Image (cartoon, rainbow, N blue to C red; front, side):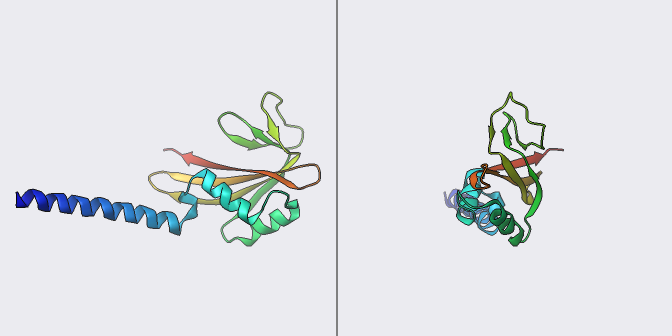
Length: 140
């Protein structure tokens, strides 16, 4: 009976340790959070209505973030978000905004490599109207 209790205690402590380790990793690396949580954080930094130049400055001010490019609208492709280059919009898929900025927020590895990007969509007045976050998984 005592041996079963000890095994149960050891297994419980192991599970609690793993849980605490995962929670600590999520706090230390915000890229591990959900896309929705990352989007909410980005909206705190660059609220809807922020000017495109201010968004670009905010992206450049965060260590580890970089602007991948300035593009046309963000296309809501069923399997992945894609900013379009001028003249390449495919009308089969809905799009958001007139212009966009694609930003690389970082990369992390668990078992596979995960790249995290954000797409900032702007209206004709260069004001932010939406932010999309995409995690791209690099499978072996």
